[in-house]
Image (tube, rainbow, N blue to C red; front, side):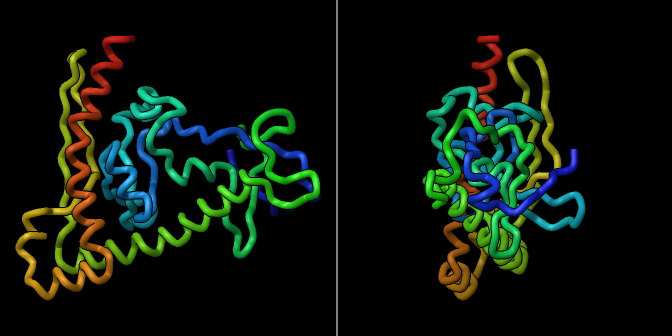
Length: 228
């Protein structure tokens, strides 16, 4: 279904309310570099390519199949990582303004948090959304700068993931990329310093280290299978 976007304003949408982020059925969610550290504490942070442009984007892997979010299944509302993209569902940046898909399932006039106070000023929920939208917009530019820097040193490599689960199912994940630690360690001092000063070295190490979450995520899926 095509989104029907309109400008968000305090008159038209004064009584509109928004439910909590619904990310429990999303297994692979785009994130901004500012989210890498928090995401990596719970799940792998990887690169993938956009189907329409072939450009790299960064995302958090939270499950192994469409509709499977192992973090949400394990922690529910106490999940340690909720992507900014989930916070913004149903709302978008349109120039200097916020656009809304008022038909999105998150919105109603009866339940959830208000977007506006009674006097028409932005409510706390809208302030959170505005911060998340800004972070995502800035993050898109930061991601492209990170990708360009890593590609300049040939640090991005394909990641082959093949996992066997306790129910006998084997899942193979294609089209994923990570940072090569071998290539990173082979860089000369000047390249390392340049990456460090640009803030890219830390992000590269976070991505590489986040692969340790892959077997833990698989274990979480096996535990879920035993409870099914």
